[in-house]
Structures are given as structure tokens and as C-alpha cells.
Amino acid sequence: MKPVNVGLLGLGTVGGGTVNVLSRNANEITRRAGRPIHIVKASARDLSRPRICDTTGIEVTSDPFAVVNDPNIDVIVELIGGNELALELVKKAIANGKHVVTANKALIALNGNELFALAQEKGVMVAFEAAVAGGIPIIKAIREGLAGNRIEWLAGIINGTSNFILTEMRDKGREFAAVLKEAQTLGYAEADPKFDVEGIDAAHKLTILASIAFGIPLQFDRIYTEGISRVRREDVSYAEQLGYRIKHLGIARRTSAGIELRVHPTLIPYRRLIANVDGVMNAVLVKSDAVGPTLYYGAGAGADPTASAVVADLVDVVRTLTTDPENRVPHLAFQPAAISDIPILPMAEVETAYYLRMEAADKPGVLADVTRIFGDQDISIEAILQKEPPVENVGTVSVIMLSQVVKEKRMNEALKRIERLDSIKGKVIRIRRENLG
Ligand code: NDP
Ligand code: HSE
Image (cartoon, rainbow, N blue to C red; front, side):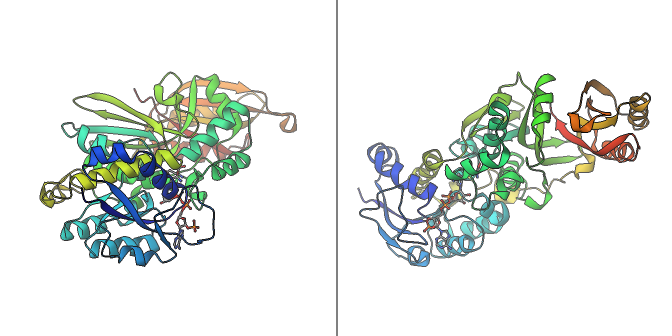
């Protein structure tokens, strides 16, 4: 059997993991793919850096273009990251008629529409299972397993670093910065960890999920994005007392007015399975019309889990090398001509429930003022909790409220008016709340 020759761009966490998994499971992988898969050439920036994998038998170069321009190579695996050099390399690989496998969600979310069109013209595949939720085969599940369904909504914990930080803060009372540092050491975080904690990485992934779920173009710039950097330990604790967990979710929902696309910290009832997904684990809950809810769970980052998805894509590519390009699974699940531009709802039009925390003067009449403002905006309050503040804030109380579902613009107006009250100190903390029932 003639081996399939692979060129690897990047020998870091995922690149190293990919070399290891391909070598460790070579026999099983060949039996599945029908041909051996060999990494013949790889590139890295600093050739003197120690690697997590054995590169014996692989020609290692510091010139990634020497890999994509090598005529002996059939498939390029891009594991550099970012969307500048990586974009140039992937375009070159496609132009050279090579199939591409990538774990790069930024590249797909920002440039996927163009790359898939180029790949279609050249009759090659761009596979990206590892770009969303690490080792979970969520792209395959939505694109193929749920192909008979009309997907109504999906909600996912799709950033392992953020989930790891929130879990450690809740379970061990650890500080944000220390946990982030550990996530970086473990290889979970992006090259710029702001992408993790500010929700950008999750927004890249949600862009991809929404596109394959609803058959819409990739449109990263339409996603409302909020990260976990403003979540405080006291909110995690008050949420627990009210029966909720705070998770960083990406949510895509089809409504009669348009599609909601949003990434933000979210209170979820603790009895939901997804509320119990901890550490670096990811999960995606998909609600479809025929099968109902399905939940996909697994490691969201790390060398071997991500390599599992990269290698699965490689096997897919090898299996379909001889098929007619027209008969392959479409990149975005729907036939390219059937992708439709359904409107995306502005955040102000989204309907959700809220957790609110405000610091209020400890005197009569304050709650009456606040509830009057909510009443004026037709916002119903479901629960109120009043807590003593820390000693340094003597004379104030922390008031925690759960609102019912309301349009975001009405909540914005109510909070603006509440923050103008003399008896309310500073900004009202607002975390959205979803039932996911
Ligand atoms: P790393 O930083 O660990 O590895 C990046 C690799 O690319 C390194 O080998 C580096 O070389 C090489 N590289 C970086 N810049 C250049 C450059 N300018 N020229 C040539 N080579 C370069 O990243 P990861 O493995 O963590 O991530 C790779 C991709 O996978 C990213 O798109 C990331 O978002 C994605 N991903 C990562 C996951 C994870 O758990 N880490 C999970 C899912 C997806 P050198 O080693 O010499 O510096
Ligand atoms: N930085 C990403 C995360 C890697 O923490 O989820 C996996 O995509």
C-alpha cells in the first residue's frame, strides 16, 4: 500500500501530539484509512527547541513554504495558529492541489468562506474537526450525524481554558491569574490568552458551529462576545446558593426574527448535565427537531485530545482521496449554493433571563425604587437575595436578583436608570441566565 505523505506545519502542543498519536496508533490508523499515513516533512520556528514528540524519520525545517511546496506531499496539516502566515500557507497548499487539515479556528472563522471556495475550485478538502471543542467529534456529529434534523439551537462550553479557570475558582477558591498561568503551562491556552478569557476563541468556534448547524455563511463579526474576566468569586458563590452554575457558553439559536449568536458567562441550573462539565472538558448541547437534545462531551484542549481530531480528519481525507469532489461532505454541511444569509439578531433584540447584583444603601425604600424601575420596563423579578457586604462596605448591602426572560434592550434601559439612583453604588453586575430545558 502506497503511504499518504503528510507535511506538518507546527510542532508545538497539537503538532507534537499529532506526531505521537500517528506513531503510537499507526497500525489501527492504517487499518481504518486503508493506507499508511506518514509525516515526511515538518516545520517549526525554532529548531533547537525540545519537542514533546520523536521526530526521527521526519525532515524538519524552519521554512514552512518548503513543506507546502514539496511535490511529494499529498496533505498539509496546519498547526501554527493565527490567520496571517497560516492563511498564506493554507492558500498556497490549496493552490498546489493539496488537501488541508487544520485545528485553527481563527483561520476558519475569519477566512473559511474564501478558503472553502478556493478548495472547491481545486477539488481539495479543508478539514477542521480539531478547530471546535478539541477532541470532541462535534463537526462530524452536526454535519453528518444530525443531517436529517432541523437544528433549533445549540449551546456549548467551547473554551477549555475558561472552563478550567471557572472550575478552579469555584472548587478551590483559586485566583484567576494563577489558574490562567497553569492553563498556559498545560498547553490549553491560545498564544495570546486574551483570546480565551475575553471570549474571542469561543466566538471563533461558535461562528463555525452556527454555520454548519443553520447553513449560514461564517460571520464572526456578528457575534456578541463577552469573556470570563469580569466574573467574580462572589457571583459564583451566590449563583450556587440560587441553584445555578456559571459557565462560559457559546449560544446559537434560531428564532422567528433571526439567529442569535452570543458568547458570554451564563447561569445554568446545576441539575443540567452541561452545568457539571468541569475543568478543561468541553460539551456541546444541540437541540434538533427529530432527535431532540443531544450532548457531546470530551476534552476541549491539550496535545493528545486535539491530535485525536486532527488524525480523524487525516483518515477522512485519505478515505475520500479517490472520490469525486462533488460527492464529498460539504465543508459547511450544506451544499455551497444552498448556504443562505438568514439575518443575525442584534444583541439588543435577544431575549434571555438575568442574574443581577447591585450594591445598595442599607436604608428603607431602596428596593422599592429598584423594583419600580423594573416594573416600568415590564420586567418580572423571580427571586431576590440580600447579603451583608464585606466590612469595608459598611452601610451597603448586596442585592442579588433573578429576572425572568426579557428583551436585552429593556434590561439595558432598566439598568441605566437603576445605576443613576443615589442609593446604588457603582455598576450593576449582570450575567445572563439560560434554562437550556
Ligand atoms: P503552539 O504554540 O504550541 O505551536 C505552534 C507551532 O507553530 C510551534 O511549533 C511553532 O514553532 C510554530 N510556529 C509558530 N509561529 C511560527 C512562524 N511564524 N513560523 C513558523 N512556525 C511557527 O500552538 P498549539 O499547538 O497549541 O496550537 C496550534 C493550533 O491549534 C492553533 O491554531 C490553536 O488555536 C489550535 N488548537 C490548539 C489546541 C490546544 O489545546 N493547544 C486545541 C485546539 C486547537 P516553535 O515550536 O519552534 O515555536
Ligand atoms: N485555547 C483553546 C481552549 C484551545 O482553551 O479551548 C482549544 O481550542
